[in-house]
Image (cartoon, rainbow, N blue to C red):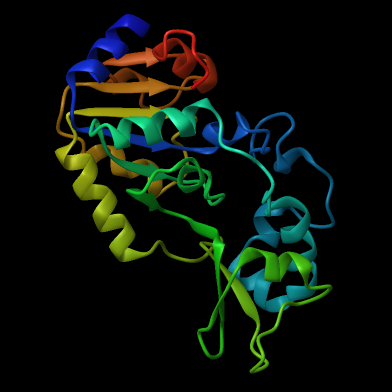
Length: 241
């Protein structure tokens, strides 16, 4: 199966990669739903409640305590998946990355055509005047981060109860529609509306790479129940890139 995927990659100049939390776990960032994920850790409130729009408005101090501790992996480095995708883009093989992650590791690895469905920790803006701030500003604030104008500085990430950015979704749909090869990796494909974007793929080279089965396995042309790191290392001929 690895050879089939490698042949697809070698022959294509229009690859799109759709990735989830499993891309980032290869760099040591915990996901939400695995045994060691955030949903299984003990907090005063469930993580999905803390990371909701209504909770942000109701208790911003607790929101930012959680956010600083669990959502700002600024020192983490890209892994073999990020580096390989950046190399494919640089060589003209990969047209776009559609990601559910907010850590910015694809860009850190050198990728440019990245559609961040759920936003990015690297963009933060004042809710009053719109001024932008780097993630270090939030990291280094002792309490609620505030702009000089007095407004709260909010991460440009999509919280629960918030909608996705229309322009980002439209760009992701166009990329998926036009892809020759669509590689989906590190996602359970249970989070909507993101998972629903796969319906727009028109090709016949859909590869799913995930440790566990997904609802889309029966619709894929190739399924690999392995870690992304192992698969991408094999695609590189054993080189961790």
